[in-house]
Length: 252
Image (cartoon, rainbow, N blue to C red; front, side):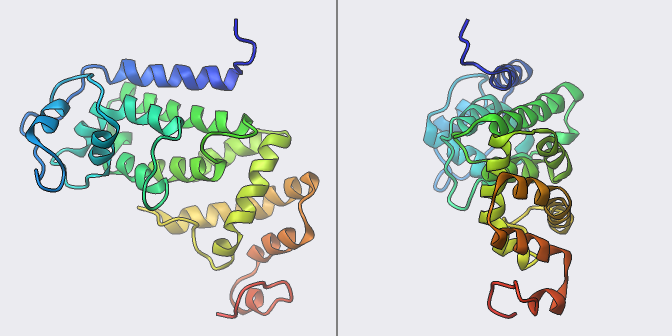
């Protein structure tokens, strides 16, 4: 037995295995097509119409990035086990942030899939997030995994709830890094990424959580007063925030 393998890692491994089982045999539609000039060759397209074979890294990237499939959900189901593994290993490097990869999930409308398929995706997202919160130096930073999970599911609530339940210095360090990285966007009432949908709902949920729950943990973790003051500014709106002595940005 490998004693270095944590329960969270075992859960993530099981979730990845669950995707493989749930989506075994999946293929793109027989009539699926894409532009040979911009997407790829007929031979590459044929790989998506055959089940379970591994795609090379470049073909996988072009497949999840494409926005013009006839049935994006079917294409996503075909590549999902390999795609998820690549995400966890930090092998997916979008040009505009991990939310770009998450939008491939959103375009596939996975929450409308049959129960065993949607449940496998939910478990993968929850397991990846739970594992990230326990890892001192995760392959993918916590703020990027949170972005992915929120964007893929169009909600912040389950991920913030999981963070609230995850106690300890590792989870708190991830919180400090995330708050520091996102503070300017949040102070400008902007979500720290370009959301596909529910942007205002997610921004409000994140801001409220940082003020009501995150502040106490950040203070206990020992972050500087400057960051704490800026988080507290999220309680204010409009001129009350911009004219506050702790306002750190150029006046809007």
